[in-house]
Amino acid sequence: MPGWGDLRRPVRIALLTVVGILAILILLWIVLNILLANPRTGTPVINWALGTFADKSASVSTGKLTHPFSDRFELHQFDWPGRAEAEDILLTYDLFGFLPGRPWARKLYARNGEVMLEDKKDDRTTLNPQALVDAVEVENIHLKFTRRDKLRHVTIVRASGSF
Image: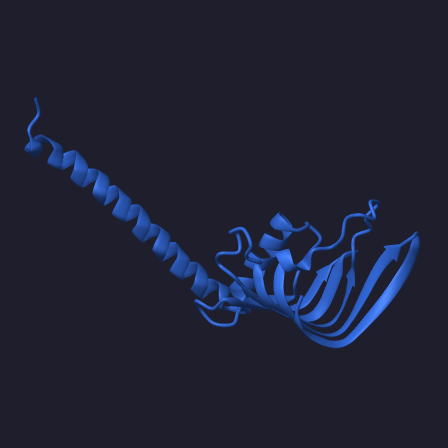
C-alpha cells in the first residue's frame, strides 16, 4: 500500500499544471485586452469576430475597447450589408450575458444608421430585444421592415431607455 509520501509528487504535478494553465489564460486575457484597446490591432480582431459570429460581409472601419479592461466597445462605420449600418456604435457588454435572463449588452448607443428587420413569415413571432440589449440610446436611425408584403420605414430621431 502506497504511503502519503508516494502521492505528494503526482498531486504537486497536477497542482502546478492547473496553476500554469490558469496563469496562461490570465496572461492571454491581459494581452487581448491591451491589443483590443488599440484601434490598429483591435479592428482586425473585431472584424474577424463579426465575420465568424455574425456574417462574412459584416465589418467596421475602426473598432476598439474604450480602454484596456473596459466593458465598452467603440465601433465606427459599422456595415452589415442588407441588415444594418451605423456611423457610430458604443456597445457596453455584460461578461455574464450567456446566463439565462441576462442580456448580452447592457447598453447600445447607435448614431446615423439603418436597420433592416428580418422578414418573418410567421406573424406570431416577434422581435424580443430584451433578450439581447437592456437599454438603448439611438439618434437618426432608420428602421425598415416588411409587414403584410409591404416595405415600411420608421425613422427614430432620438430615443433612449430600456425595452
